[in-house]
Each structure stands twice: as C-alpha cells, then as structure tokens.
Amino acid sequence: MSTPAIVRASVRHDSIKVEPLTCSLGAELSGVDLGDASRDDALFAEIHALLLKYKVLFLRDQHFSRAEHVAFARRFGPLEDHPVAGSDPENPGLVRIYKGADTRHLQYENAWHCDATWRECPQMGAVLRCVECPPVGGDMIWANMVEAYEKLPEHVKVQIAGLYARHSIEASFGAAMPIEKRHALKAQYPDAEHPVVRTHPETGEKVLFVNSFATHFTNFHTAAHVRVGQDYAPGGAQLLHYLISQAAIPEYQVRFRWRTMSVAIWDNRCTQHYACNDFFPAVRKLERAGIIGDRPV
Image (cartoon, rainbow, N blue to C red; front, side):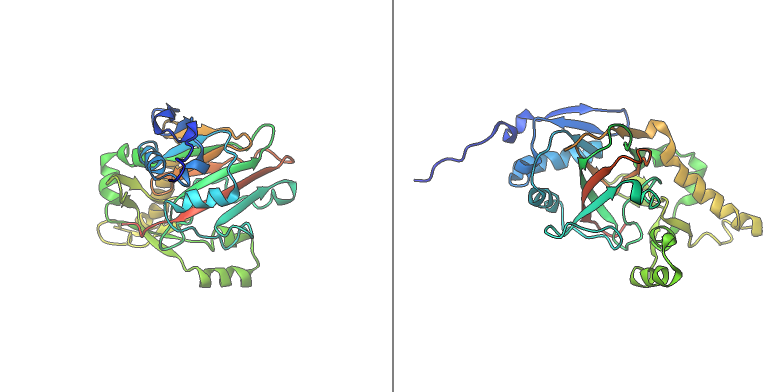
C-alpha cells in the first residue's frame, strides 16, 4: 500500500489569496508556490484562470529551481529561445535578461511592446523571475490593451477595422548591429504581418495589437483611407503612432517594483509591458520563460 503524498499548505487551492492592484489589470497572489504548481494540475488550472481574468499576476518569495521555472511555464505551452538574448545553457527556453553598467547601451526593454510580435506566432505569455535587483529603480509596467481598444473613439475603431501592420526585429534588435548582421537577422526572421485589432483566442476579447515592433500599416493605402499623399504619409504613420501611444495611458497600467525572487506572469496576447532602465550602475537580472503562442487573428 502506497504512502499518501504530503500536501504542503501552498498546494491547498483555497489558500491562494488574490489582491487586485489596479482597476484595469494586475493582481498579486500569495499562499502559492509555483514550484508546486509545476506539478499540480488543479493548482495550475486555477492560476491559468486568474491570468485570464487579471492579465498579469505577481508573486513574491518564489524560491523554485530553474528546472521548476521551465516546467511551470511549459504547462502553458512549448517555450522558445531568443535570437539575441542568451538562454541558460542547462535550461533551454529560460532567457537571461541581465543588465548592468556594461549593457546600458543595449536598451530594448524600455519601450512599450508585446514580446516577439516580429514572429508569425508571437509569444502567448511569459513567466519572469527577478534573481537580482537594484536597491531602487528597474520597475516594470504593464498595460491592458483590451481596455485600450475598448476606449478608443468609435470613429478610430471603424478606421482601423481590417488594417494590418508589419512588425520587425530588424528595426528593433537589429538596429544596433552592423549592416551585414542586421540583414542576416532579417533574413532569418522576416517581418511578420498581424491584424491591428486581434481577437484573444481564449476570452474572445478585442485587443489593440500594435507596439514598438510595428513599423507601418500594410493595407492602409486604399481609396477608403487615402485621398491625397498627405493622407498616406504622414497620415498613416501618425495614426500608427497614436495607436501605439495608447499603452502609455496611466489608467490602463499597473506598475511593479521588483524584489529578489519576485515573479511576474503575463498574457502577452492582450498586454504590453515596459521595463524601466533607470537603475544603472546597479544590476538587474531577470530570467524569462517565453511561451510560444498562436497566429493572431
């Protein structure tokens, strides 16, 4: 006869405490260990449901192993490495975002973005843990792009219905590379084209889906939008800039101050985020498991 498993307090699903952080998005969870959730189906299902509701979840004092980090994130789906940022050699898919005085010139995170929209299938979400943080600064901010879409003026919603935008790694990560490496990066990861308004595959919500990786609309230059050249250029570019700027509205945001062994889990399909690079010469070390997503529609 087998011995019953010992269930730690953190595995009891009714022990999870949920504290909403803003009226728009974000909740802090306590009474749960993600190491346990990497092995417990019911506990993971509850966290998944909370993620769909709050869009970004925060947890403190998460001392799970890197292997458990990867195992928990893989419950959402397969993981992917990053072509520019390096991964932990023993845990593929666990990308190391280590920033200090020697990397302050490589500032990719301090712009509003969804991860990897330059891929045909951008990430579904991510599980990010801070393993070393500055004494002050280095906060991260998330924005609710469902609310950003819902609160657009109605005439703008009509104008952008059916529009597509091009998303580029060459114009972002590639910009700091020599021209040959930049062209090679684009050849390996050609620009992706996504709808400006996507539908969340699990909730059915409409999402404003342009960010700092978006370079231009691909089907704007039609008789419906363009009377003369000024409507197209700079008209289309100004509209794209206006849409991207919606993430910067404070009412759509939640801001999180890192402490060592804190974790953020976010739904990349309906949020954008911004990592503040204001902490140099201190160090901020983050480890992210990015989950492969679907093709936006």
